Image 1: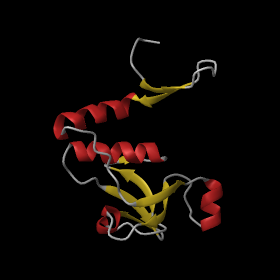
Image 2: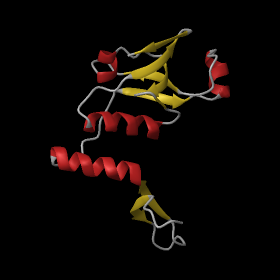
Image 3: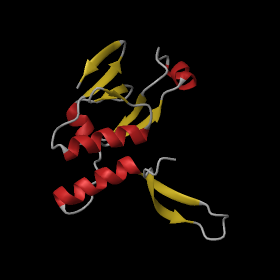
Length: 132
């Protein structure tokens, strides 16, 4: 509405009444910064599988929260394992900012990579809030 970029087209389905896909501008900015620093886009990988936490998922697992990302699996030898993340943890924040979906998690981790630092995770684990 104000002439600001919100995304960059990445694919269009011909003949589908203008159906297109775009990469959000926040990711484009990170991609450009990574290309400047590393000569290519580096996609950070934690080595975890997560699912968005909501009331239904929380009730199934007996978790007294309704926001965050539930860690479903931590891959052996991954950066997440080295960091201390465990199956059943709920990621609440990364670098002091709430994460409620995978996009936000990827964005926060990528921002840390650009800054050449390790992200700080605030997690809920078995009734306690911890910082990793």
